[in-house]
Length: 281
Image 1 (cartoon, helix red, strand yellow):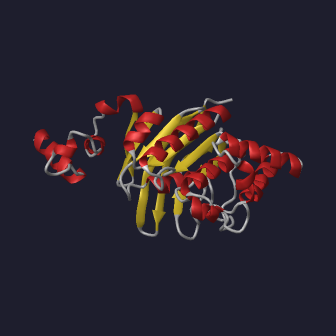
Image 2: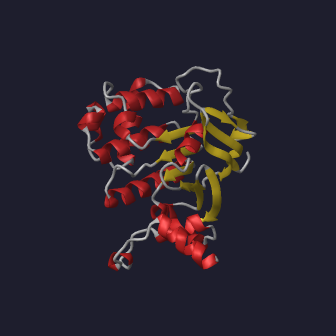
Image 3: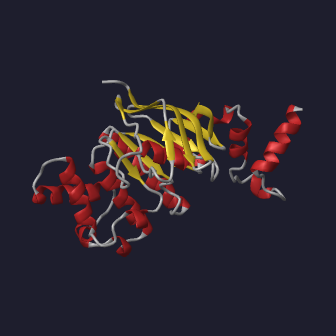
């Protein structure tokens, strides 16, 4: 079995005449936690959706020299159905759990459906496994949640349910698109910690798409930085302080700190870029 779970070479995503991702190269090893970071519009979500197969052929054009999951090509020709077809071995946690969960089906029905599609088990066994899955993500009253619908749960509870569903298919790669953006700071840390811990238990690699570079530094192994549709730097998370690309350095300097709170004007990407260009000159 290859050590590389995901291999991407020369991947480009275009929406009409607009190119969102240019010639991206990316690798994720088994059990590794990789973050894709950048400001809004940098192309990180388009890259994640292209890998997962969530871009409609009529809306986006995706080309790649290589796009492999567990050594099997998952390049999509654009001639398939409009509704995405599940890629075995890949699961995704979306930014907005409210719109990702079916508001008509109960949480239990959705979780049981995934479990039975993954393994040929009885409905009774799947229901028992579903309750165990909900407990595993920290839900203390799983029987009640099994009968609830998504709009009856808090944002934090919905995000935990999404993690339970995503990991129930036993993926080798879990893609998480802004998994903490709808949560406050304390809940975000707990949710990220829970997700990476559960993925490690399941043996799944994690690809996190986020604008929160500090959270990614804490919970991932590698940070991939995107700027204007291009990957400009890949660096070990522990070495972020030594990042060399001006854009990465700009992102780091824009992180709010106790020191920056005393400034009359908070740093922005534009102000940091201007200063760095001045220093280089």
